[in-house]
Length: 318
Length: 222
Ligand code: SF4
Ligand code: SF4
Image (cartoon, rainbow over all chains, first blue to last red; front, side, top):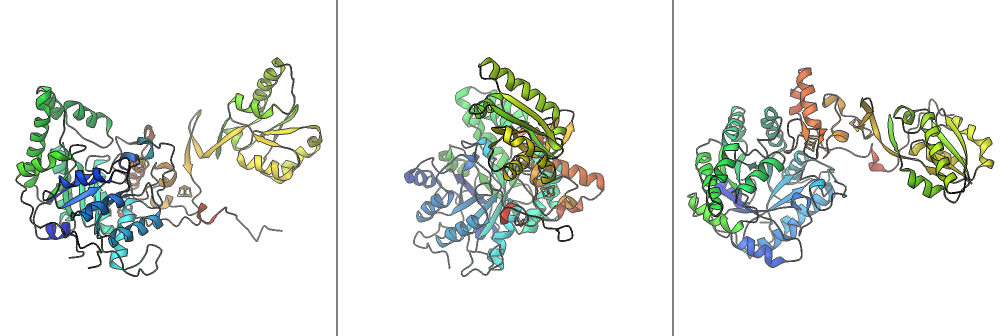
């Protein structure tokens, strides 16, 4: 074991892991974080806390992670290279670990153009691959990116994203290989709707033996309505929603579409359980967090194997 | 080359209002090539300004001149004989030229007529696109001759991001995804193994990271 991360323990023991996410509120509303996270208690092994998701200002991921950690749950600190240079990243990582946050996800982040501050400058001092390497060296070598020694190096379990559906497809396995080379421990993928294409990607991943070097959690997002299916298909860059799914969602009456969306996602999970190299699921139920317990339950993924972390343990230097 | 676009006429009119005698100075280099501030554009802007101020009943006296290079002290001297006969200079050079005018002629106000945009190349007649951000430590040799710093919207040195779609960037379908271009070129060169090497975090000091830069060539310095 490289870290004390609950997620790592579960993955290492061979259980299918389950993570979900909590988008912090757009204001000083700590109770919103608690409400959303509370729904996930006992249901998931880690709660991703997004970092100014879709380039909109929100409560910082670090602050929301601390709230969630104090509730005795396991937050996963998301960090995008858009908003921070390497100094800010490293200080926040040390800060997070000092609060008992031992798992993180390194991302490049959506471009500011998509958010509510399109006039902002993107930082992009380092990219997500370089961020993974930096966090790994902080842990393994006990060194800052600039080379100096860290007194009390943070021991982060390091995640990153992979999108098997973006272009060019032939590069997508190689891009994962770059992250593996950089030292990533686990991957959460983009939402999977086109399972055939995902399986093709996984074949490529296995051909290179990458599935033995990194834990891959399959990304799942239930669709609430045919409108959402269409939006994901047409408006979200790098999202692949096959026509049959949009048709299937549109083929049921409006009040039954949510249930149809959940059925689709359960079928997807069932099919992915059989794919070699898939080590768990990352459920992104956007503004639909209360459905996560039901989905996890119906997918046969309950009970979760490990008890939640002790709320009293908050220093993280164990 | 350095590319630029002329500012809107209204903005230029606004800054010239307090003055009567103007020296309108173009430049024969980059801004001529990108049709923003060469001899021809000096002529066009001069007539437009003349027309406007004439209509207002406050005619301007505009002297036109186009220097070989405004960013070069040697050519800048050609402005000297004019300086005591004008109230202000409107420079149609890039930002470098404007600043050289300001540095050489301390007592005369100088205004930029252009918005300087980027270092780029002409993609087709009438279109220029960004190619280089002067990072001071060129990586083109590892990226198939396509610059990820100036041409990837997220400046990724290990792209592409998850938003690359059919060769286009997630930011705007008019932008080619730099990493698609890099990949295509590495394939064409038979050098796809270069992609697998992770480019390390960039040292920005040779770029703007260490403050404004200078080049000193002892062999040429006098
Ligand atoms: S790598 Fe640096 S020097 Fe080379 S083209 Fe790009 S920005 Fe310019
Ligand atoms: S789509 Fe391509 S060019 Fe645009 S940010 Fe992503 S990698 Fe860079």
